[in-house]
Image (cartoon, rainbow, N blue to C red; front, side, top):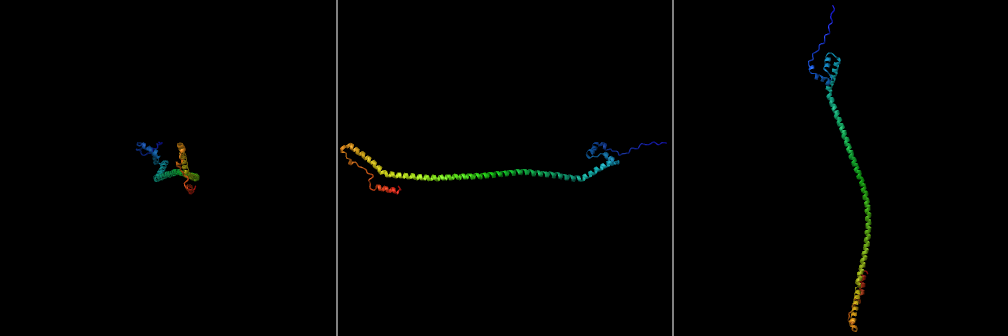
Length: 227
């Protein structure tokens, strides 16, 4: 009698009551963490690859849990240090640029002022030479003018003095001429009025020049005055 072969019995599995009710959350495992509940079930059922996958992720997770905070802190230090370094370099270069421009401006200003100073000194020297020459010419002219004026003034004063002296010296003679003219007129009137009976001896005749010592006195005074 031949025995019938029985179908192999299906391996029993634990009933998963939760996953069907939390499908959305189940999908997060794969999307967010790179594992699935199927890997979990496979590893439980002796799947070496699934177990290795979970073990590797767990190893990485353990390392991350232990070292990630320290690494994050170090990265933050690197990033903040890099930021501070580059900011400092930027500040240095910006300030260097500003200071270089300021130094260039100051240098150019000093150079310009130095040039102006040199020009001013040259102009001052030229002005001094010109003024000195003009002053020498003015002084020379003034000295000559003063000498000429003094000479002319002295000459004119001398002429005026001589003229005044001559006028005074000639007064007796001029007076005498006038007196002679008056005398002649009186004689003529006497002749016209009285004819042969004219008395010329009664007409007084003035004599301004016959005074004793007049000419000698005038000569003495002229000599004393330098004439």
